[in-house]
Amino acid sequence: MAKGGFQGGGMGNMNNMIKQAQKMQKDMMKVQEELEQRQIETSAGGGAITVVVTGKKELVSIKIKPEVVDADDVEMLEDLILAAVNEAIRKAEEMVSSEMGKITGGFGLPGGMF
Image 1 (cartoon, helix red, strand yellow):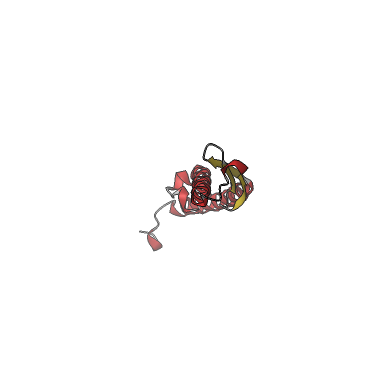
Image 2 (cartoon, helix red, strand yellow; image 1 turned 90 degrees about the horizontal axis):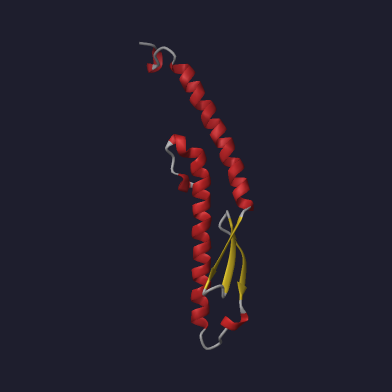
């Protein structure tokens, strides 16, 4: 048996795996940069609240229709904002997971880890 437990063409396979891993890392960095530029828009309350987040899950904007602003029911407005923001973050996570899964799929790595 060869030293280090490698037999026959094992080193060639190892070099190939290293090259694949390096390519995957480069592809992942490129996709992450692209995802950071993408935006997800969601709404709540039938469009009363609209929010936009990036692929980095950063809140970019919140739009509130004036007719939903009721000084006597601030709690409803807060709930609508929370619902819209949480939905936008969930969609951004799905987008990131899906795109990363395209790259990591062959390696059995969970796309959601990014």
